[in-house]
Amino acid sequence: MGQFYSNSKDLLEKINAIRKNKKVVFTNGCFDLLHVGHVKYLKEAKSKGDFLIVGINADASVKRLKGPTRPIQNENDRSEILAALESVDATVIFTEDTPENLIKMVHPDVLVKGGDWKINQIVGGEFVQGYGGQVLSLVFIDGKSTTSIVSKIEKS
Image (cartoon, rainbow, N blue to C red; front, side, top):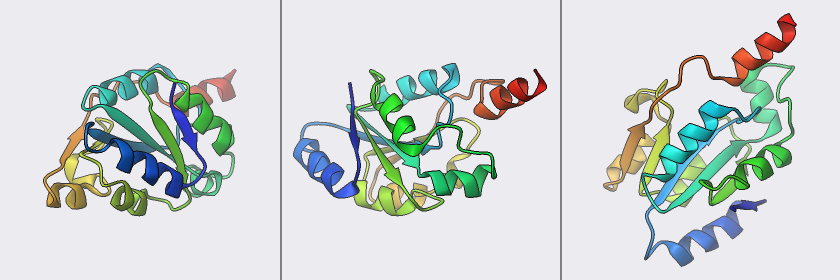
């Protein structure tokens, strides 16, 4: 089971302690309603290294990105749910609309996003590639999204 870090300073201490022996993978998102697409994506992300960190958009950020009815679950609940997954080693909340500052702090060996993102669109990608890190766009599972679940509920 992973650890939910309430601040990036504590996470950075953990990363520095494991970095010598482990390949650090980073991804991010809102993860408002956990679904099978998320689970498969996070499992694949973990397979790209040894220690998977998931940056979680803060509630205010989700509202700005997804609209006034989101998030459905609060940031702490979303972080704890993801941290409970076997594939996730750490979660941390970020308040900006993008995780760029967090990526620069974490300095991951591998940066991943879902297959709906092209490599050149991935925030922080140029930074990670600049020091020899990998940037990957993983498999996207069509029809599996929080937006489609919310839409289905609204139509019921």
